[in-house]
Image (cartoon, rainbow over all chains, first blue to last red; front, side, top):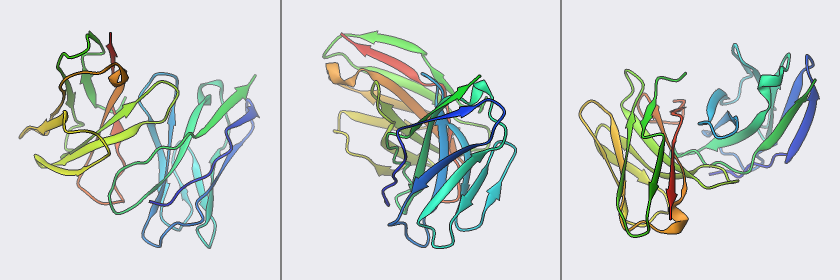
Amino acid sequence: DAKTTQPPSMDCAEGRAANLPCNHSTISGNEYVYWYRQIHSQGPQYIIHGLKNNETNEMASLIITEDRKSSTLILPHATLRDTAVYYCIVLGGNEKLTFGTGTRLTIIP
Amino acid sequence: ETGVTQSPTHLIKTRGQQVTLRCSSQSGHNTVSWYQQALGQGPQFIFQYYREEENGRGNFPPRFSGLQFPNYSSELNVNALELDDSALYLCASSFGRGRNNEQFFGPGTRLTVL
């Protein structure tokens, strides 16, 4: 599976858009980019996934660069409940989610 | 709420004992994956079951075993417990196999081995 690189931590003001970057320069053409988040001691929560097109759902938007070597998760209007660890994962042929250390996002009131 | 449930929520065992953890998948899902999350780390893949057959295994010893039942619920069994087995155990369900299937996680079972 392709390795991902994320900043260890980020802050964002409440009400602003939170933009979380992820690098996955070794991604293969048929590997998907998944985003999950985990609020303290709870199970990870699925957010969004995509292959090469930008995706949007009720929670977030996923922007994937044209060369697919990086992506950005956008939470359009961050709230205090969005404080969590966010994981960017590249899902390969073995279909197992390989979690790294993620980005700890803190929403500041 | 994902519709994935796990039992028990907490469990305390002593070294050398055996434990069984249970997972009920979301309605309509036929694939269950198990993960171990040690304190301060991301979840680590243990194994996956698809339609009652093991479909991939992570780097865990054979004393970690599992089952999936005809109703697609699942069990994780750990024999000869070690102190390092203390962790949050998570199950996730999905519909079918493949890379375009999101996995939905349960709340986890916190196992403490003394």
